[in-house]
Image 1 (cartoon, one colour):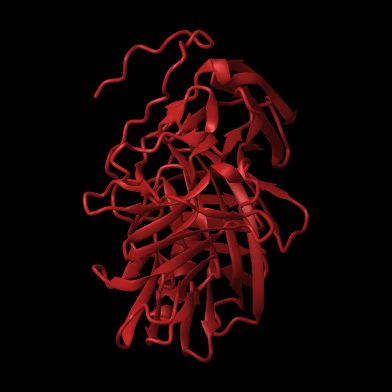
Image 2 (cartoon, rainbow, N blue to C red):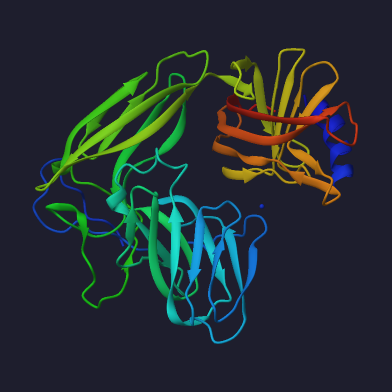
Amino acid sequence: MKKLLCVFLPALVLLAACKKDPKPAEPGTELPGKIPSDPKPRPVGEPIGPGVVAMVTPAGATITSADGSFKLRIPVGAVNANTDILVQEVKNTAPGAVGRSFELQPHGTVFQKPVTLEFSWEGHESWVNIPEALGVARQDEKNFWRLAKAPVIDKVKKTVSVQTTHFSNWALLQWLQLEPVATTVKAGGQAQLTVKSYIPLSADDLLTPLVPADGQDIALGEGKPLPGSFIQSWTVGGVGTVQGNGGQATYSAPATVQKPEIANVTATLKDRKQQLMVVSTLTVIPQGLVYRINGGPWHLLPADGGAGDEGFEVTASNGIRYIVLAWGGGTGAFHWDRLMKTALVYSDGADKHTASIYYDKALKQYVPAGGALNVVELGAKGDFISGSFTMTGGGEFIDNDQEPIGKNNIEGYFCVRHDL
C-alpha cells in the first residue's frame, strides 16, 4: 500500500508547490466542603490557518473570524486612532475547551472602552450539556487559563459573551462536563469516563463557582473528578453497557459491529437545587477502515498502519478501491495541508481519485480541503492505531490531471494494527 501513496501523492505535491492530591475518599462518602481545582499553566496554542486582519477606527467595528464562530465587537471611542487588529485561530489548549480558540493582536492593546468577545457554540450542541456551565477564558502572561467574570449566556443564539479591555488568547469552555465528551471506542473495547470540574465549587451547588477573595478571574484547574455524592445514576443509550463508580464509570462496547454505532452515556447529577445531566458520545467502530462518500452508505475495508516514508500511514484496500491516510505522527487533530503532508487519497479502482486538496482558480494554487484527521490512539507495534477523519470539498481528479473535475466529502473511522 505504500506504493500507492508514493505514486499518487508526489504528483499532487508537485502541483501544490503542524502538588500531589490527597488520597480520595470512597465514592459517595465525601464530607461537605469545597471541591478544589489544581491550576497549572498550559502551552500557548499554535496558529491554525490564516488570520483575519481589519483596520479599526475610532468609529468602532465588528470583526468576525473566518468560520463565523467568534466576533469581536469594538464600540465607538474604544480606540483613539486607526488600529490594525488581528483575529487568529490557534490550537485550543484551555481545560474543558469547547470549539475554537483565538489569539487577538496586537498584545498589550488597551482600549478606552471595554470590547465584547462573543463565542458561538453552534455546531457543538452535543458537547454543551449545561449551558450555565459555559464560560470564556483568557490565557494570562504566565500561561494560566482564567475564567472571565460575568459571562452573558444566550441559549437562543447559542452564544457566550464577555467584556475586556485588553488582548490575549481567548477560548470557549465548559467547566463542568463528562470526559471524554466524544471519542471512538473499538469493538470489544472499553472507555473510562469521568465527570470533572475545572474550577473550585461549593459542595452543595454545582453551578456556583467559588470566586477568589482577591477578585481576580478564576484560574482553571486540570479537572477534578466530581465526588460520588453528586452522582445520581449512570445510563447508556445505544449499544454497549456502562458500570458507574461514583464520579467515574467504565463503558464496554459490543464485541463486533459492521459500521459505526453510537452510544450516549449519561451521568445524572444532583445538588441541593437541581438535577443536571452530562453526556459523552461514544462511537463504536469496527476493526479496519470504514468510510462513506457524500453521506452515502458505509463501506468497510481491511486496513493496516504504521510508519511511512515521512511519518505515519493508514492504508485500506479491498483489491479495487483504496484509501490512504498520511500524517507526520502523534495523536491529536491534524488539518489537511496543501503540500499533502497531512493527506487523504481515495481511489475508486478505476480512473478517479479524490484528494484532500482542491485547485482554486482565483488564487491559482491548490488549497487544502476542509476537515481534519483525528488520531485518538497510536500504539506501539502490535497495538492499535485508531481515530476518525472528515474531508469536505476534496478535489476529484481523473488520474493525475492537474485540475479536478469536482469535489467530494469523505468521512470515516479507522482501527488498525500497527504492523508496518
